[in-house]
Image (cartoon, rainbow, N blue to C red):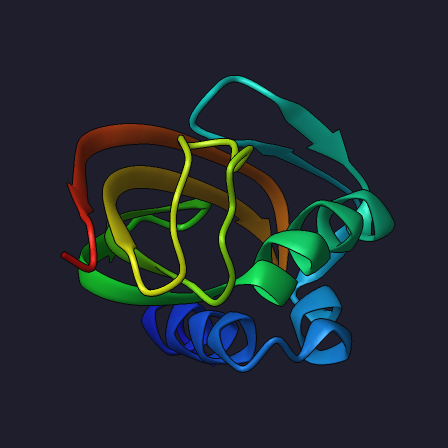
Length: 132
């Protein structure tokens, strides 16, 4: 699978909350640094971080563009968070049910063969759209 197809399959697994499929993309000791600087190490740590977020929001990621060399893929991603419940203590700021947050991120995926070994994200843009 080429790097673009791998990213598309990875994002599809993420959007479906298919954690088993998602883990297949990670090296066992994968390192993920999210936009706020938090570092997660290992498949289990990444799933443990995202599972509660996806229980309270519908997060959908869209790939805006990507390119790669033989070891790193760079992608601009747009994430939409739809609050499924009131979230007064949501990490990105309080949200009410139905509110939406959008993030555009630049993400670097280091890979060896079919596995991501390191993922680094930086937030480029944030937008908040309350229900009304």
